[in-house]
Image 1: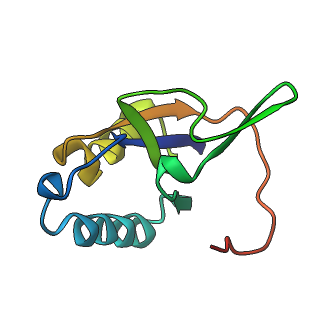
Image 2: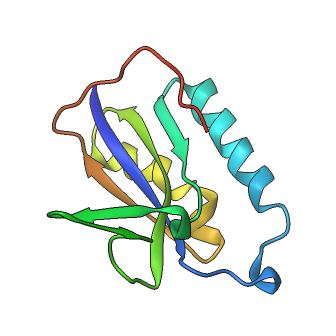
Length: 119
């Protein structure tokens, strides 16, 4: 079965007034649905973009790689029989209803070490 990356985009700067009530719970339910369906291979939520450190050549700077209106808030790797099925799964991501969006890209190759992510 093919694997696809779902890159979850959100606004780079979200004011407290823009926070959608129940947003986190909706993402947790979506995650549980993916686990229960057997489609989920891996998923990671990222800390805010202002915690990023970028490297370009020999220059190291605080902050995201580029100044943008949207940033990647997290990503998931799923298995689906084809792109249409992957898009159907991606459309269910709560980010698509909370002012953000998702990008779906086929996986060319990769590796997952047998250890959990740590904060």
